[in-house]
Length: 84
Image (cartoon, helix red, strand yellow):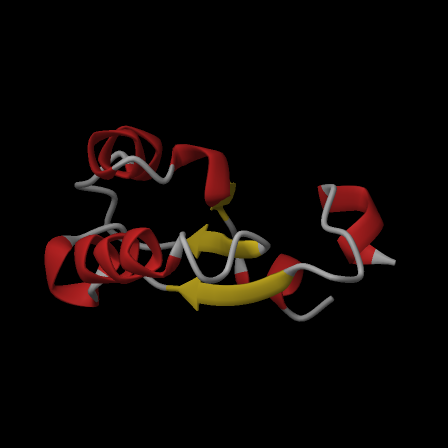
């Protein structure tokens, strides 16, 4: 159900990362890893749900690394939204 709402096909491989949008949470490293996998996993998607501290703009960081098209940014999500 949620895959369709987010535009994720049944064949897409999703990595869900939930955490504050700060460097120590590993967002930049995740985007770099996804970039390295692009040639072997074209159907890879990163679903980002951030909460708490917001120091990074995840869309901008993904753009810098060249994976913006692979990012589905849910933005800041509260706990009730995440439990769905």
